[in-house]
Image (cartoon, rainbow, N blue to C red; front, side, top):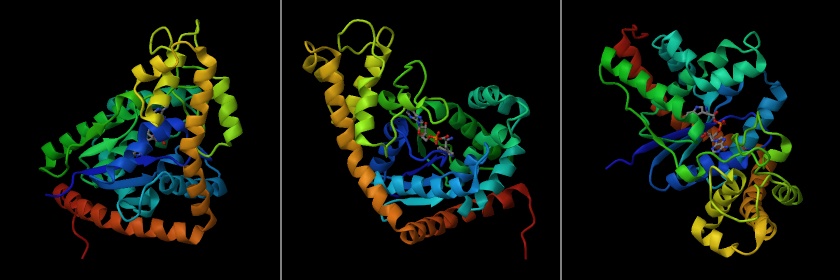
Length: 334
Ligand code: TYM
């Protein structure tokens, strides 16, 4: 039987992915390549929904791809590519935008949050239609499951609605994708403000840990992470959101359960807990950083791998678009 298909994407909008991206998404991508037919893309078309400097975009697209390989994605076992290398993404995005209600798109909370920050005159139409392009990414590959963090759940709901609408109007065309969200790591929070998610755009430098970050800085940030009243290391979302977030990170990276961790630090207070956690984080990220640096040292090879990925992705994307064009009644080009 064919393996189920997964697809996910990451924006090249920072100099490094952060610990939330890694734990909430990329780590699952690495696991899923063993059991699924996996496609992962660096979504550069999404990155330009906010202003991007060309040199930086170029650099960050390579850094994002290198980090995906550095985190353990194997070009022999999955397909890693750059979204803009497969023009069908933009084409299907347009078609789906003609199936999306204006009101429906207006309800997307990420757009509301982001456009509120910049003011609606500054926000681009591309930022508004961002989730529709995301739906195109997913549907082009006839994706069964989409490994993402909690913040992407609403975009996936829209994707499912659009797929069902298209199938209903034009006949069975798209697989209806489901979310693959791992609850314990679906929302890693900001180290300085546990009420918000760790985020490239919203977090202060002290609140975020980059995967490529210098170990000394990682230790400092964890030592200064906001903890809660009292000194007990206890998992308690409501009263101890800061400690709870650190327990989640510790658990995910060490394989230890929360109960085990609570037991281990029952009498030691926050200090020893944070110190050990810092070492766990540093040890987990060091090999990723080293492999990423190696990948970045040979840009030609990195670009070659991405070219291979785009070629494989393009085969699937073109087949879906052939179906879509035919179902919708576009004349075939002769
Ligand atoms: P992006 O680039 O913001 O984030 C990449 C992935 O990281 C997850 N994530 C988190 N998980 C846990 N805790 C956090 N603090 C945290 N911050 C980010 C995100 O949920 C995401 O899975 N719209 C997507 C990119 C995209 C995409 C797609 C995803 C474009 N097309 C198709 C899936 C399928 C985004 O902005 O991801």
